[in-house]
Length: 352
Length: 278
Image (cartoon, rainbow over all chains, first blue to last red; front, side, top):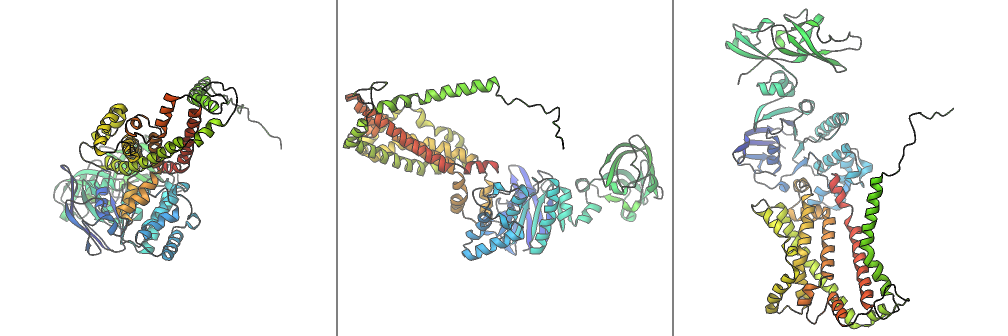
């Protein structure tokens, strides 16, 4: 169901963990709260789940004000960071717990537990204890337990943190499919920007107890509203230059035409260029903005290579080169190369 | 196909190091020291002699027979069991909620209170006995079995609070949050989620309460009056006549405690390890 958070403030002593957060999650939407540790994202989650009462502001769920409601009456399913499965109960008992607390008839409980087990593909595991399961299986049990009672809202608190990379990737997609299938309004908390980009309909980037920017993953990546968002989401080259008359003077590159030049006041400007937009050698030759640079470091990543370069007369930059198996090896350390980018790949990062 | 044995794969020595042997020997000695009383008491209880003599000159069941035939002994045993049972119930009923409060409360000064729960163990039992005698005499609790049970509760409470408190501090509180989020009211959370996982602590606490009361002499001497408990009866028996009946009673007492200990490990295991692994 639709979730609204308005003007939430939560202070611990003199520190404001949440400094006035507004957030709307549409019905069936998958929204990610992305932020570094200490950004207030966990406090926000707790306020929504009911484990923390905000000092100011309101939480509305499906049109109902639940700001002061105890957790048990909120109908919110939650997957904890450590899953918080009950170790003394079997998988089936764990999943049945929320239904039993709602005094559902026994036949209905059995049937819904079975359906939930099928949903997360753990049919044969009903009688196991949580500690007899792998991390990924435990995660699915926690998910089944959180959705079995048809919650109004699903909260996921960094649920993939403890899993290895391969498993994490497959579970991310699985959770996403499941969420779509059930049409569950979902709030996902993570500090992992890659995870946020993979899973979300929209991302809200949090820092210092406030939402810095909210939008679709592609928009946030291409057009971050601040240095923090540009830096936190993906890898970035942040170039400092001087704007004037529709162009920016960038050390090493010279005069570069600015996107949306008309609106740009003269003066210092910060430009974002994603590493994949910076090309080298042959690929750079046809591009209008060029410079010369020295390779400082080359990291081979399989499908691509990452280069750290120093622009002649300018700053350090990152470039990411796509690599096909038939391509020659990327330039090695110490090699002097031509760099280039297209001006339309630049994004002006708002000051402040 | 010929099988090659890799050259580097020399058989490695699995012999224990001298340190391990030394530790093993040391542990063995300590065990012997612990079991020595048993090794003396058990044979004497089966002695054919009419006085305490070791090694016993011959075998007989007579001292067990004498215990079973004496209504005084049986009555004292029965009373001790009653006292210990009530003491356990009281200590658990009072101690478990107190342990919850001490482990969970964020109030200032709670940590100090927590340290103070050990006070009854630190105060010499004699002093406690005299003090309680004064109070109990006025309340007419001296000579009543439940009076003694109340007094024993004072001694047993620290065990309960310390053990259950330790269990609670090792308990992952997000479990309770999860249960609340899944729709459970707090009595249900405690009953279905918290207490089952504290089972090992609870069972150990109950066992220690029971045994501490069943074995207690000093308070019993002051407060039991004519209604003697087993340790009091044994003490009086030694004062008046020393015969191996006392050894037979000891062996029975040891067996009872051993059975309780067995039950404790049977019902107390499992849950703790699962708590730790998560």
